[in-house]
View 1 (tube, rainbow, N blue to C red):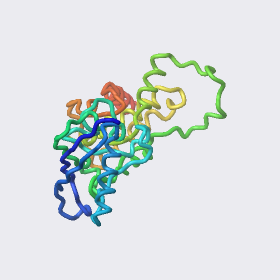
View 2 (cartoon, rainbow, N blue to C red; view 1 turned 180 degrees about the vertical axis):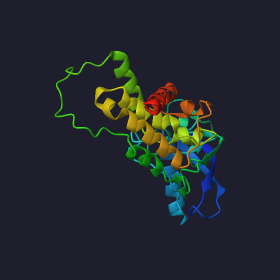
View 3 (cartoon, one colour; view 1 turned 60 degrees about the vertical axis):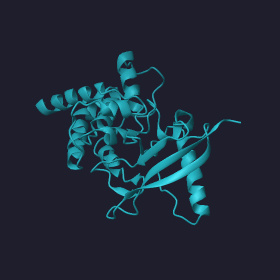
View 4 (spheres, rainbow, N blue to C red; view 1 turned 90 degrees about the horizontal axis):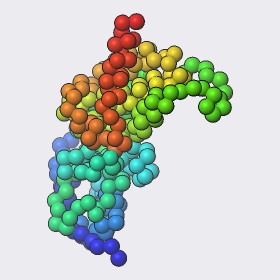
Length: 250
């Protein structure tokens, strides 16, 4: 049997985007330290439901740190205090009995709140639609290694492709910037031969879209890098800025 802990939760509750919200206090007891953070919320919601109360709304899907659906600010940290860990992979063994845990939604003008911990992150999808894809006809799937790609470029593209689009970078940034997310998508495709023909149009369209949606500018605070559950480096922001300047002058 794993040890258990008792916690005091202060959870943001808000029934809708135009209604007033507040932090609501709940006591949870006998939580296994092997449980994940979302499983702890499941236990709380089960108890609330049995008591005839409204359960806490929160986003989740795969619960394997892959899909990017989950996300909340835990004690001031997007996805919680553990480095390169998504909320669904955060386990209760990282907390101590008697801890007070404050849980809030992503805070960003571009992410309007829907209910409780759920926000609308559709703005990130809109940025992708602005150019985060390859539309040129590249033919059928080539044989492995038939297209020569330098190892450094391939590794850089794979590092950028690790982005799961959770929005933690936006929530952590003091300016609410989506530069890390956008640069990861730009860097991923621009480094590969298949993405080169549309590189200039892609970066200009995605950067323009990002600005139109109300995201702030990068202040080089590096909070985005610290909060990213996949460890995406801000070096990709520098890469995107270079791509944008190349496209601008051409």
